[in-house]
Length: 152
Image 1 (cartoon, rainbow, N blue to C red):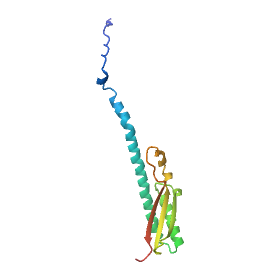
Image 2 (cartoon, rainbow, N blue to C red):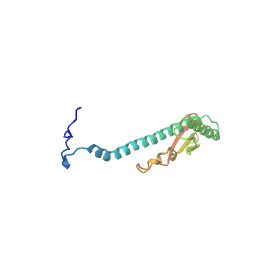
Image 3 (spheres, rainbow, N blue to C red):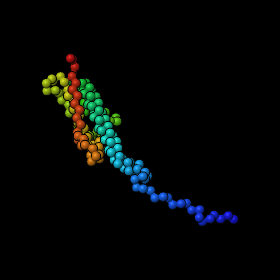
Image 4 (cartoon, rainbow, N blue to C red):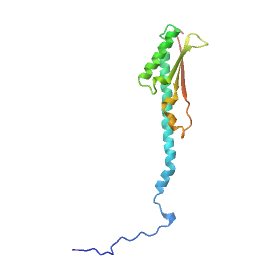
């Protein structure tokens, strides 16, 4: 049987001067930079969702305004526009049908122009969770589209 001699223990590391130790530097750098990066990524995501919702709202409003041309009376135009908005929202918009208000009327300066306004309650987007680290976003988004009825 072979036995190892007890004197073969690994030597103790030499004492290191405080300024020459590089271990843990990456962890300190990460701890300093990570909050800023996380805030930046959160801001990009939140603003992307907000801008996407505004674009989607604009698209739904334009579709409702175009559809309202088919109505003969003002009441029928308003009904067609509201139905078109609700159908568009039910078919996969970014927000729920109960979060919008639809107003349809004629332009004060031109009775041949129908004005459709859709207002979204932006608090339903769920972006308020980021209000501590980002600037406050508006609580309502409004899109207005005017369309001329018949003729030139």
